[in-house]
Image (cartoon, rainbow over all chains, first blue to last red; front, side):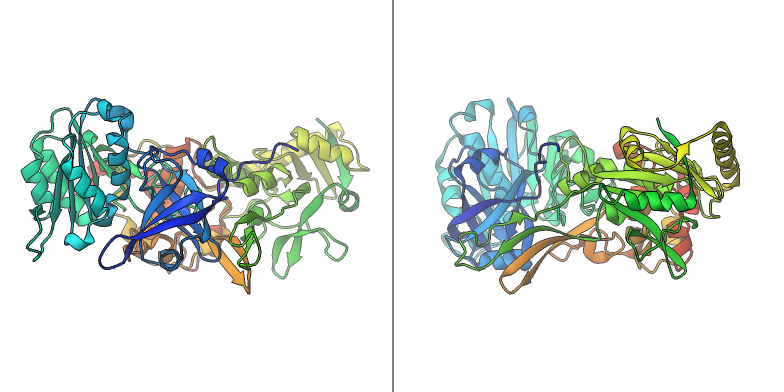
Length: 284
Length: 350
């Protein structure tokens, strides 16, 4: 017979190496995984913007964006919102537990096109995960020179709901990235950053679209109101990049549920430009 | 390529003799209907049927299939590690498959077997299968295979083709796989000129009997978003009760779900057929559902078959014209009419 086929449904066994509770409502945790077989780490070679299926025996799988950067070796991380069967079970697991990850899946942010450009990153709530991956990737000494100015607008409901607080504070100190952290509202007297919704802060801080690409990830309502702000500044739909979410099972374009028109969010996405989305049925 | 003649009795005996080389599936009468079953001593093949109620889709792509297994027993060093279930891909032959149903596997193929990913279970079972078709002397009133790239004696997706000549079968090998099958088939005799002539006559008269003509020629040129917003979807979906019968009967519907099932400490990861007719199909964990409404799901089914598939694969429509969804829809939704609406739709006239 022919050689055995590679099985794209088979997860790599991994061990939970570290769990960090990110937000004050304890609904978001970051899981750091180490591959049980060291050679699997090379096979799981990914690019910022991609996702993977977190696979738990007896529970099922959940598609989650990769929060670590390929420049961070030895592990891979995911920040997971507790929502359904799989993610609730995951939130109850402990460091040392064994499970699976399957991927990397999907496309990625347009890194080739982004080289030599000003990069604007706009994130809201817990959709900051693959944006964190992208920021860490761009700030790495091997990559920083490939990009011009990097500006980040990141908002959450209140200070306790921000992800990656230590890293945000560290990036605030750097002079090679312009951070604009914001919260919808807070009564914390020590809050030293912005207050206001992401579209408003974007309007104030992002005033130049010259030679720039914007990546936007967040809840639909944030995207809806940020999009006209960016277009007003001069971002054409080709230069506004979005990452979508859909219910998925296979992650490889076969099971049929995550399509928008003839495109699959799992295989042709999750990253689409606004120009692409304007030519697709608005069914997402 | 081999061309042989068998009396019908002899053909059934010949098939029985092939059982050491193939798992043989044949049409068997089951009440008012026919169904494909593994040939054994208790079940008599019956080649006298219009078409089976269910297509033989499940012989390549089972309705439920165990993909992986695992133990949750923490004392086992492999606890929680997901492993592939052992599979047996012994050669199988589907004998008596109608040309539309064989064509359907060709339509489905790019979904499971493409340059980026190969579904190992679908591909291996497809590769281990020999398709021996049975041409349709008397197509049904709902058949429209000729409108979608097939025909009552179409050879698409077939390895061999049977012609029902009354008391005899003429069987022609069409591929190497079919040749291998017929070389192992005992008995029969070389087809003579008269039989070949008769088979050509059958094929021609069958073509004449298909009166349905469905237009699909303009689908490719339509703008997807315009067709999506066409005004007829509410009316098309009005009577639909979202029962999903159309999707389960359809030989070209391939959507599936993956579920974990656990008994005590042993677990399986199982694939089951799913249906775009059900709201759970697309329900997000957040509660958001891009296809929450019936009309959105009905539109998805027809747009997928008649527009999205066309745009993605440039391989015609995702329909083999078997007519099962038309015959079995409890509210008489007819894909031929919907196809005409879509093909004739003009955005400017609205």
